[in-house]
Structure formats: structure tokens, C-alpha cells
Image (cartoon, rainbow, N blue to C red; front, side, top):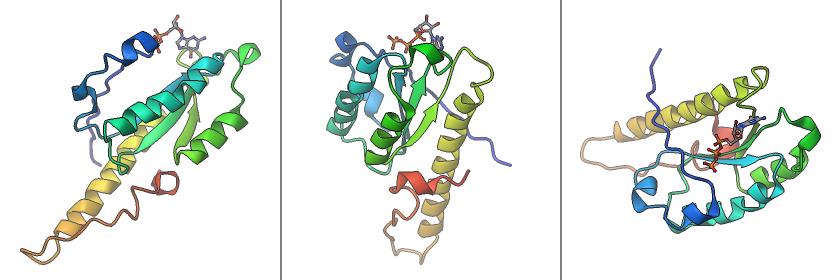
Length: 156
Ligand SMILES: Nc1nc2c(ncn2[C@@H]2O[C@H](COP(=O)(O)OP(=O)(O)OP(=O)(O)O)[C@@H](O)[C@H]2O)c(=O)[nH]1
């Protein structure tokens, strides 16, 4: 068994903070979790801008990204149907998790997000180590067999 340490940076989601997102948020980032509020369509439509923001800071495609719809306990207030979110997640090669930070019955998906990312990062690292174990002095290119294809690469 291997322990994977995870450092999570929570950025402010409001538009007025977006412009002040500083370079160091993006530097050396290993994974990105895009969170929207299932009861607020605007938070979902804003995802496009956040993804562009991320791409604009040259976050490499190998960096796994997941999409999280939070507040799924508020069933009567849902504005973003799962089907719409799934379509978006598929189009951007991300896994979709629907979670609630409030309802303990739905909270297991919060753990699943980080477990999944930890598994992916560990798998990427193993792949990298395996590739670097090639002939001495012969650098080898890391083929993105696992990592770049986000959806099917999770070993969980
Ligand atoms: N019902 C419900 N309320 C939630 C859930 N998650 C957060 N909240 C509530 O939503 C409000 C905003 O929560 P925050 O944790 O401040 O949200 P945030 O994404 O950090 O907000 P920003 O800092 O603006 O990005 C608080 O009143 C929380 O109690 C959830 O899963 N279900």
C-alpha cells in the first residue's frame, strides 16, 4: 500500500476573483477539479471560461481534469441536469462526479474524486518510472497511453 499526499488549493470561484488568479496557482499543478453548483446554471456555463483560463496558462493536457457538480442534495432546485453535465464532461474528456458536501449519503463521491485523481497520478508516475528504466543514457518519450485519454485511464 502506498500513501499519496494531496495538497488541495481552493480558488475563489467568483468572477471578480478570476482575473486575479495568479501564476503560481497553475505552476506545477498535477490535477484540476472544476466544480459547479448543480442549482446554479451560471456556475455551469462559467466552466467554459475556467477551462479557457486553465488552457491559457498552459496546463498540460496530461494533467488530469475532473468535473464536479456539487449540492446534489438540493434535488428540488436542480438547474443543471446530469445528462447535460455528462455531455459537457465527455466533450472535455473529463470524468463527472455529482456530490454533496452536506448530505453524508452523497459524500462518498467527494472521497472518490480524490481517490480517482490519486490513482491516475500514481499510474502516470509508474508509467514514467517504467519508461525511464529503459536503456541507460537513452531517454525515452513518455507515451500518453494512460494519462492523456482521461476517461478510460482511471485504474480505480
Ligand atoms: N445544500 C448544500 N449546500 C452547500 C453544499 N456545499 C456548500 N454548500 C453551501 O454553499 C455555500 C457556499 O459554500 P462555499 O464552500 O463557500 O462555496 P465556494 O465554492 O467555496 O464559494 P466561492 O468561495 O465563492 O468559490 C455555503 O452556505 C455552504 O454551506 C452542498 O453540497 N449542499
